[in-house]
Length: 221
Length: 214
Image 1 (tube, rainbow over the protein chains, first blue to last red):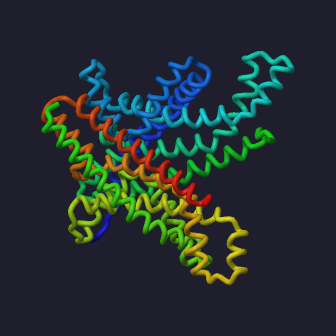
Image 2 (spheres, each protein chain N blue to C red):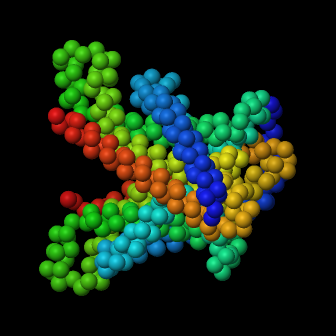
Image 3 (cartoon, rainbow over the protein chains, first blue to last red):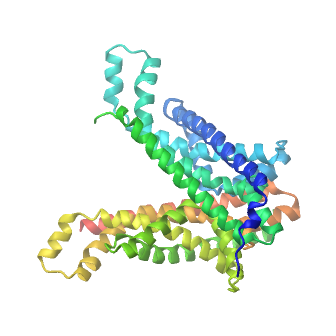
């Protein structure tokens, strides 16, 4: 067996645009999933009981089924209920829904870990509800959940590869296609694997840096 | 959905469970070796183990599966796609399980090991009677979690042509034009299996807890 990696580099512009797709889909889906996850967690904690049970079912179903099945339901099943989406919007929506269930569980634990004394103290000194959320809840929770948020964001980065199966033109699909056309699939996949590895290590490193920067906001127990 | 088609789905679900179970078991064995290497004071062992864990946790499983599936024939190793799929799943889960086990072994209270030293246990006896049982008990929740992750991740082996639950749902929805039905049924079966595994896990934890209090 001989490996020739130069074949893959001849298609550089194509790979660059696929890389861009992977990155922006990952970032947009992660931000939307964090926002949706926060809303789900907040509604479960402060909303009525029936809503809590309904959202719990949502979280359990999403977390108990494979991402690929969810994507297939959305992409191939969607048109049967009037939801015809192109691959990229379908991928974005699927990843947002999938991620939101996991993020909501992280926020749920975060809500539960904030010492009630802090809220009571804030009420005692006369802070309004909005002030309590802005000055106590959000900053304390950010510190509590940041490591898990970073971890989940990195998991989602790897999950973007699955979007290739519903033909989203991201790295795995494009590099795989180039590899097949050039009869250099193993070379293409090896480079792809090393690339994802570097990306994941880099994200982990940046996440660790952010945690260190924000650690001055950590409260004492 | 006719009974015949539902039986096909159940058969495929059985295959998903079987392939996942084999992968988890092989992954546990490899994970133990990687964990032992990573905990070793010898750099020659610990550095490759660290690289292994980082690599297999840093590359998407789908890419690992596609690579292994195509690399084996390129190296002249011709195996059925099931074997390639199990190899991919096992190598990946081994990295995660090695980290779980490392956490377990590192959490064994030092005092217990010192006490075992005092009563004159050999290192092997300490491992067999003190460190391994405690580490196993500590890592059981993580192991159950990993089983559920692999059950769900096994849907990706449909891509390398193994007929399991996801691939069966794909085939049946293509031939009947009813993707909503078959993917929902597949999702329901995955959900049921995951709940069963989670329930079995908490049962095992409770049984072991009563065992330890006696």
